[in-house]
Image: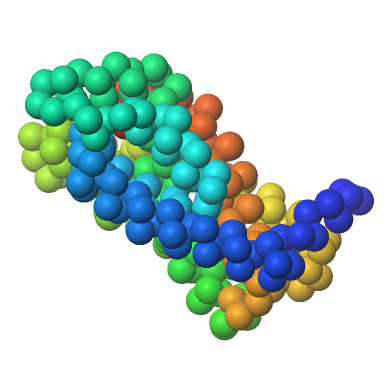
Length: 233
């Protein structure tokens, strides 16, 4: 049996409350930053990063700073600002990280929404898994991937196809990571699937999305490499 007792802090309010409190503060700062200071951030990421902050908290903030936020960007203006931001985010791993954050923001919003509903109506594991997959896929496809692809495609139908293709592969890996946490990790500590009114739900929900982000990084690297997704910064 998998020994994951070291993760029991994820159901402790002494961890979960500060985690999400820091996340909420990070949301406010990042929204201000991307629209007022670090304005060269990809438009889609301006909406994705705040969602990431909610669940990834301080980890999300660190990722934003090291992959997307050049130090001192607020002091640059005009072409200097454009060039400085471009140089800072030009590394492929930073662009792939942006693609992953964009993916996880859309998928994660759908997954957590579906998870709340699933626990409220008491679905078993597999019905819940596929419900979360479907809702996460639809959120990611229509709200995030389609909007990003629409600017690059010459028709709505092509944008839908390109977005759906990218979302299909990304979502598989995100949901594998989330599913492994749901199936093998959470039950070892919480027993039955925790309800949305518990700290355990939100602690392990964040862990599931984080593991999903790790799982989908290689997939997004490949998708960016073959041109099926665009690196984002």
